[in-house]
Length: 524
Image 1 (tube, helix red, strand yellow):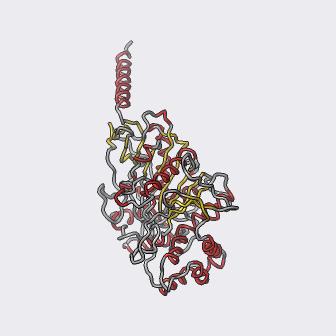
Image 2 (cartoon, rainbow, N blue to C red):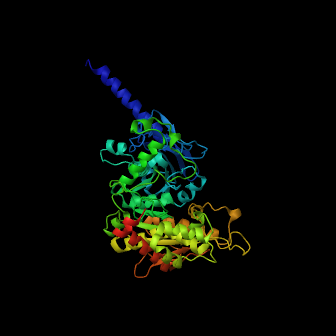
């Protein structure tokens, strides 16, 4: 019996721990996740958690390394406010920091047993900026429709995507760059392991994002590292089906690992250093440029996270075959075309498209020598339209899961004397409709109905893998024998022919040529 006091102490300690667990778990909005207990904000119809760490802070020696396991904490962590955003140009109300790997959750579940579908939002920002704290990304409307929403952060700019021979040498995979994509994958892995505690079903995860977020969705669909982490994908103004190229153009942003490493060496030289140790010793602000600078801040074909040219991967059927919604806005080009002068426009086309300039000017003509809507559509399609169209065509040919193509075209009819006359729906306009955040004071006829329809299409897709449902116009799956897009326009969406399909076919001819030995050798 001499060990009885020790046994008694152990029993008392176990009882106290059990009481603490019961006490913690019985508190409304209190959940146990990897790392420890967290406390969210309990509302009448949902609970909101903000600033949940899903990985260790990527600082110091962890800069430019794959995300590492979260660091446990003692007690109960308050997750009632947003955490830092990634380091980038511009100010953020919650601050910018390398310590940025956090996610947020809106859940309507009252019990972990509910097994609700989950939507994981990936923000845009040209891979050089972005934050989960944007008021537009509020998950309230989705949660009220029975879907859990997660918004997850990832490193951007050079801190998220810098490649360098020294970084590749220290990596067991022999590659560098794509850390931001690895962050996204780590966030999805965290969701798989933890979302059941919030009432979510890890087998019913849909990823969605816009711009760089939509491109990320496309890349995750191609990455073997993301296999099994989601069953559906929604890409808004995204897609990444262009070939690699030494010089960056919208829609031809991808570089090979060797090209990106060479660029990384030049970036280090411009900062007056050469080694990885010296790079890591520099302040984070040294890697930030004003505005959205692509150099050193874009995903690459590294042979690991992204094994190959995504178009070729889809041709071979080498991708995560999940149901997809992919689409773009009618006037994406208005957000990226910087001039109206036809001569300057033609010179820019000759620099990028070379021998295809004439054909593309016929397909996307100037109007009275001026870059207006028709000519801007080339920018729209080169950066977004061709990619989503190609995505749907390839998946319809080589996959089993359906793909649904859309064309967002909701805008006022501007008078002829307005400087906005002739403009369509610009880049990013669709986000407010998806999140049910259209300002009623600025709404135009049909906005409320379209917003509600898009919200239902998106949540239906998350729940079933099919956007269709009661009270909605039928959205046909993409069929190469009868290709159609869903026109998200006006009060009642409708299915119709693929917009500017003849012009898209000319652009498709260009991209095929670019992948040929001649086109690859010509690209500069």
